[in-house]
Image 1 (cartoon, one colour):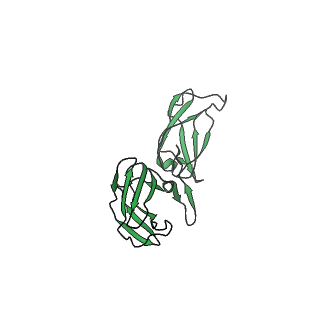
Image 2 (cartoon, rainbow, N blue to C red):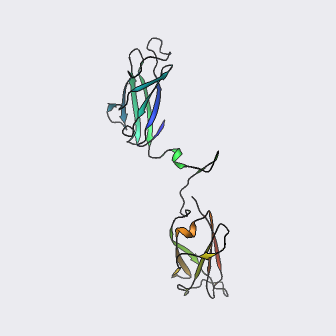
Image 3 (cartoon, one colour):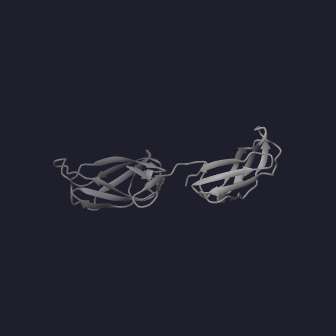
Length: 205
């Protein structure tokens, strides 16, 4: 099993009769002796007692204390009239369900880290302005660039911050969360003597 670090979990396991080594051992109830080892350390008793389900199956309610350490979580279970049961799980800081974002009934998406996130600040976004007559990089515009954004096809409105000059016709702008609050964003930069620049950004949730 893959267990999430620090999260409780009901871990099921099977106890088998030591008479035929096949039949599930019933009737142990809370009498299963259960110890676990975290990431190769010594074995200690579990905090909670065993709970019988049926047909030789039991479970122990693991607490955040038992799943607190990343690595192997090894178990040794014993009970009267039963063969020992041994198994090991893996504790990880993230599990697959941490990546799933529900997108509606019957649908889901996977969250992937990205530098351009929806409704989040993006500082130091760089862009190049070129001359409308020569097509060469155009320095010297300073703060005279008009920066606008269109969210999801809506009309253009001013960006929160004003671009500043970096060098050699390259400029930067700190895009605010409000400038990126849409799955798709069209940025438009314009200035006297410069060709208009349009940049499409696709953000991630």
